[in-house]
Length: 111
DNA sequence: CGATTGACTTCTC
DNA sequence: CGAGAAGCCAATC
Image 1 (cartoon, helix red, strand yellow):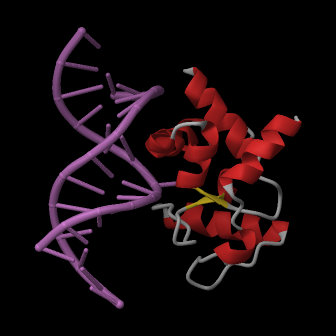
Image 2 (tube, rainbow, N blue to C red):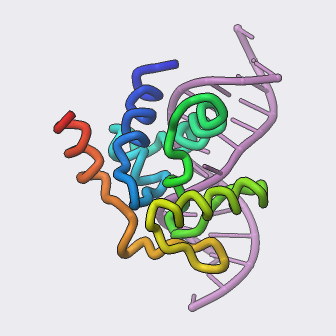
């Protein structure tokens, strides 16, 4: 558990409800654009036990990137429950719902 | 301790 | 414009 990982965690938690963020966005906001792999890893390790909004993390195309069909379906349901519109194919309207790295940083600065 | 992996991203052909 | 391959960093096995 490095400082970078903790920043990633905080950044993920900084994503406001009703919005989504891409891996690259999280990585940039965390301070290391190359850490998007670690974002994935963090989600793998923490999503099971921590209170992370893993459901708000999707790929840059706006599609749910989870490989497990059940997990992807669950994510879709959770997003819809937050007010995020998800298309049939599991796609989110990123133009509306994707939060920028600056916004995440601002939220972290605010807290 | 070294090799592998991983819910991605981006550039090139 | 679409498909394919490389890149990347840290945690896990």
